[in-house]
Length: 439
Image 1 (cartoon, rainbow, N blue to C red):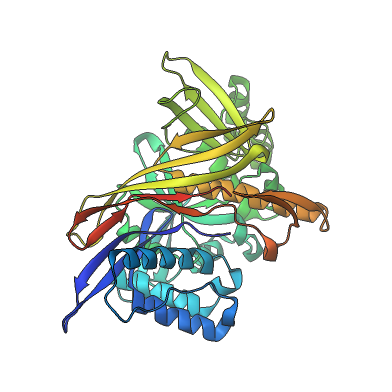
Image 2: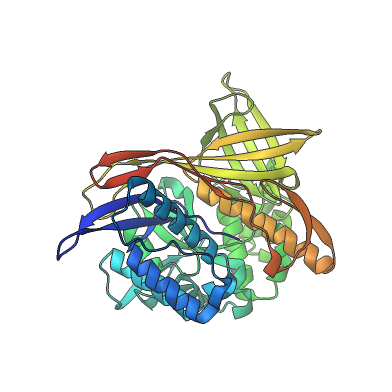
């Protein structure tokens, strides 16, 4: 599936020997990933084509004359789409040409050289694992090192991930984003402008039934237990009073197996809870707390009169969704060009032969979208395992067809729409709205 790449900011800068060039700020999942020139991306594309040939998406052509505003906008849009499409191919993403270039531009953006470093990776119980890494080590590599230290079986790595997590007093936390395999945890932590941010290890699946795949590994079981305890403490999981007392007793006895078995019966076990946000349902401006997991979006909505209403949206009825990025440039002179992000995620929901759009206004819109992707991929994998020849209906933005569920044929159900732009300073522009359609 495509990744949440966008280029909301570009700068026109002077060349050392005269003339000027455009520096593109590439964002991934709503956060600055790197800054690159067209010429760098052009050379990278040529290197990729020597390896993968014409299967790559089209790359925007060179212009030998001065670009007009419309041409500059078209190039930026084409570069953005190129990044989205080229990262959708798993074979390309695993290649050395791909990873070496993205490692280089991440380091260069922050003027960081490849050196030895120590990184603390926090576990759900608050304890940290200190690992010796290189500043150029990707998240995939760091996860392998952490797993080795914990004794986690290598074949179970895909069930876990590294996350940027914001920590609050009294143990509360907010998941900022999941680090993709080719992100550099060291640079991600350095560039993050979120206060009290840490690299954390958590499980990365939203189907609680997948717990059974991990229980034969002691280290994996320990991690599941830590996270279950933490999720109850921070009230992401909602046990009844009777369940809470029984869980406390099992925790006191250190009976992890029984604790996890009971936890799986608790409401919202294995879900990820987002920070409070606002939504347009049942009326505009309602405060909502979203929990995502087990093929549903569970919403606890506070109405204007103070009453609460619980609504669960089943993923099987979600036809598509889109993330809209409304950015405001705050710092035009700083090294990172700070963006004040206004984000919304809207999804189309079908119920009783009616289709309706629900809008959620949250700074975690990109992470929410990643969670929705994850649930779809898990559902497709489960259907494939049950019946490899099964034909399932895959929702798309403009059409629906039946396709076999195979990795090589996975469909992307989102796209990026373009609206207007706002100029904040000469040579700088922020693309006002970036929309990503549903998966």
